[in-house]
Image (cartoon, rainbow, N blue to C red; front, side, top):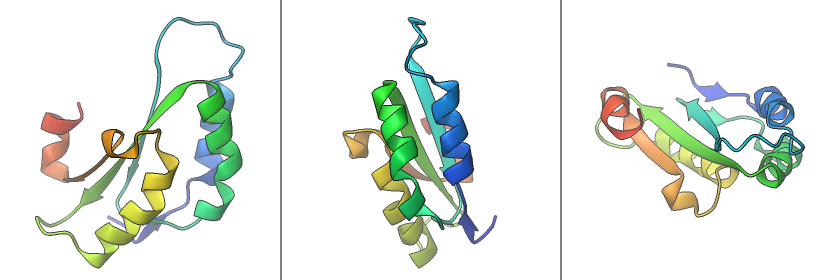
Length: 105
């Protein structure tokens, strides 16, 4: 697991994939996984707006190494949570790797 994540390009690409003009009746869902702080949060507002306008439900999951939350985990939460859909508490989790299967999948 690394120290941080750059997601601007991936979020921008996701916005293009979920084009708001697509009339598919399927729910639109984006899962963002990170094991560290997002290093480019100041670049994400335009992509988040595109996703919101396309009615994409964006979920964020911080993957942590230990049972207790470290400073790295808290930093990851602070940068990931503003990107997820509202209400943020319903679209965000901080989980150990072994907990993902029972809590996300």
